[in-house]
Image 1: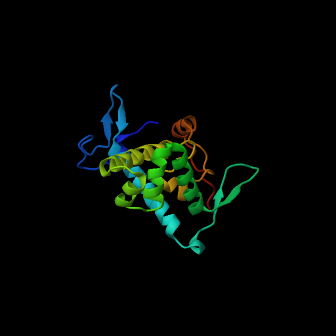
Image 2: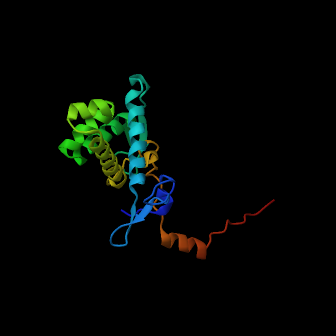
Image 3: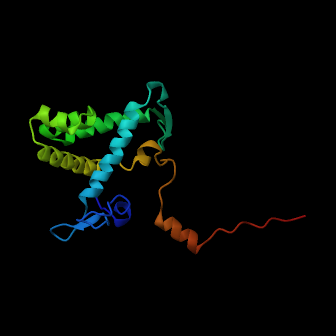
Length: 189
């Protein structure tokens, strides 16, 4: 997955010491990789949407009709909020190790503060927060690089691009530029 400066710049923290607010940093082999502040920001955006979807009242949930380009089934009904909740939970469960998932479950899913988590899990405060940052980075990268349908950016999941539009064709564009179709001039009275 290629990361560009235009998509990481808005997510980066301006005071970050690793990327200096650009969102990208050089890896060991000279390859640009996203900074950890960007990955944590992606996780926090997805987590905020998860909390919003979980805490809204059940009767507020929307059912949406999604158009598709296929002949067999041109439209599909879906419940976007519930689908996002399930995707967020299942992707997190599959990505994290057993110990990481325990911290994730207590802190993020159940909403326990750091004092309760450290007491329940038997770890000290420093290791707890280091684990939380690692979990946020790991899930942020996973949410962005998930194929074929990533959880981030959220607009694709909730207001997704229509699959009805034809794909861009460079040859068709070149033909249209070289041989424009002018409107025919009809007879006027």
